Image 1 (cartoon, one colour):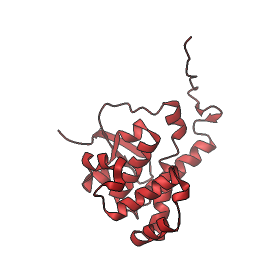
Image 2 (image 1 turned 90 degrees about the vertical axis):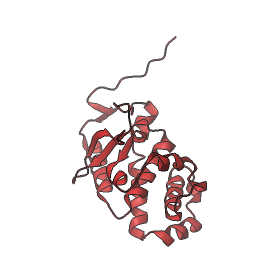
Image 3 (image 1 turned 90 degrees about the horizontal axis):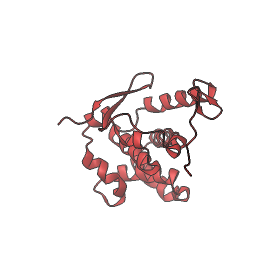
Image 4 (image 1 turned 120 degrees about the vertical axis):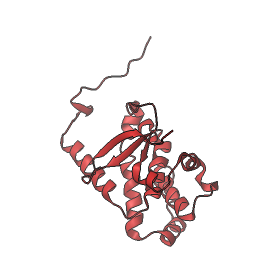
Length: 177
C-alpha cells in the first residue's frame, strides 16, 4: 500500500489559502519589512537565518547565502560552526543572538533575565527586536518544510539578495571555484 502526499492546487499555498490572497500578502509584507531592517550586522543576521534553517531543516534556506553576509566575509567554515555555536569561537554577541534564536524556536523558558542581560550587553533594544523578527520571518515556512515542498531548484549553494522592496532574488553560485 503506497501513501501519496496530497498535491495542492496551483491556486493554493496551503489548503484554503489562495495565492496572492490577503493572508499571503500580509506574510509577504511582513517578510519584506523584516529583511529591510538593517540595524544588525549582516553576518549576525545570516547566522540567525541559517540557525533557523538548521533547526527547521529547511533545505531551501540552507542552500542560500545572503550576498551582504558574503561581502562581509561569511564562508562555509562559519556555516559549519552554527550547529555547535555554544562551543565555537564565535564572538559573544553572535552567541547571544543564536541563543535568542534557540530560545524563540526550541526552548522559550531560556528567554529569561540572564539572556535578556546578555543581549543588552551587545545589542540595542531595536537590534534585539530585529533579531526576534528575523527569527519569526525565517520560521514562517515551517509548514512548507513539514510538507517537504521547500526543496531548492538548484544543486549548489546559491546567492540570496533582496531588492529595496524586500523581495528576494536568487543569483548564481555563492562561492567561485
